Amino acid sequence: MGKTEKPSGVCQGRHLMMLVFCALFLCLAGGCASQEQAAAVPLVRTQQAGSGGQALGDTYSGTVRGRYETALSFQVGGRILARNVEEGSRVEPGQPLFVLDARDVVQQANSGDAQVAQARAQLDLAQSNLARYTALYEQDVIPAATLEQYQTSYDAAFASYQAALAQAAQGHNALGYTNLTAGASGVVADIKAEAGQVVAAGQTVATLVQTGELEIEIDVPEDKLAALQPGTPAAISLWAFAGRGEVPGVVREVAPMADTATRTYKVRVSVLQPPQGMSLGMTASVAFGGEGREAGASALPLSAIYQTGDKPAVWLVEEGQVRLQEVTVLGYGEDNTVLVRGLSPADLVVTAGVHKLREGQQVKTEGTGASD
Image (cartoon, rainbow, N blue to C red):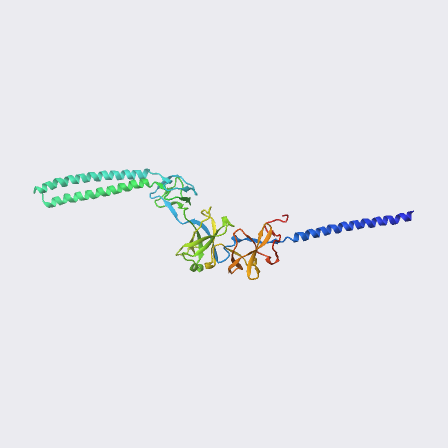
């Protein structure tokens, strides 16, 4: 009986080994299927159509500035009593910004009034003497030379009186200059004086930037200046509004002299259609491309173009799938870029591996994770 039980144990071992091999095969097959399924959804590199507008032509970084920036200063000197605004405060015309101690100015105005009274008294005396000696001259009591002396005295007194009046008026005007007010609506920037500080007449204490007309200031090297003249069109993109596309601009002013430190020229570019929310100090990119730049154009890498016959196109990613979109090529840049028309600023364009895609294929973008 021992001989008949031994083969049964061998068979059981063989069956166990077969089960183990089958389980391993199923696991490996399932793993390969998962890998093949993951590989079927490729990862693509994309770019928004509105984010590459500055790729063609010359591009310069700039800052949003106000066209009218006024340096504010007192017309008289003195000690500042109060500062009523902060940097960034919005003000209206006539709003008080700084107040000076007016005691010395009041004394100057009082001194001017006293000089007016003194000059008036001298004028009244000269007028009385002139009238008296004119009557004596008419009676042939005094010679003409004596009358001329009193006439001259009267003229001098009258002139002194006029000078005293002008000086008194100047003193009263100075009294009004102790309040520094805003001459226009705008934003206060670059405050350089504080309460208690003594300032001289004409010393800048703050800057008033009028926000009614904003523009971009850029620095242009001298070898590029010849291509930029007043009226040159430009395409402006704001870093704070990335993805919204570009807004049109035009060169308004070119500095006649280079900066002594940077040896670049200041160029002011007017924003023809300022986007809502555009504020002072924002960072902007200003691109110049001559006649090749057009409104609604997008600059893309040359690798994004998918040629189908004679019609260029690009792949767009929409809800995880790719769709072919025909475009019109407007021009080519020196850094492997192409300017196209026919896209919206928010379109997501595939920029690499375009010849391996097919219509409606599922893809993953760089912004999606592996678990999506």
